[in-house]
Image (cartoon, rainbow, N blue to C red; front, side):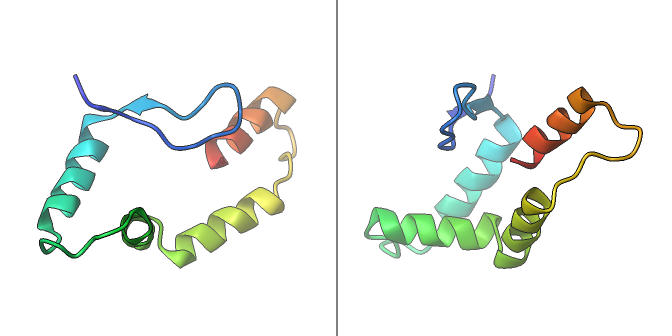
Length: 87
């Protein structure tokens, strides 16, 4: 069984997932950082976001969320599911 990891999500459903692959990737990344290269939580946060959420990806996701529209012939339920996946 994988390790539990959580991202902050203000909605009641939360974003807690069990994902061994993601945990392995992030653990390997963290272990490869030079010893002493992270001294604050802000350092860790900044480096993590740069590594796993590059600005181009973040900008595209923000645009996709802001410009979200229901597709022609798509049910409201399908559109809602697609929107939640973007979040």
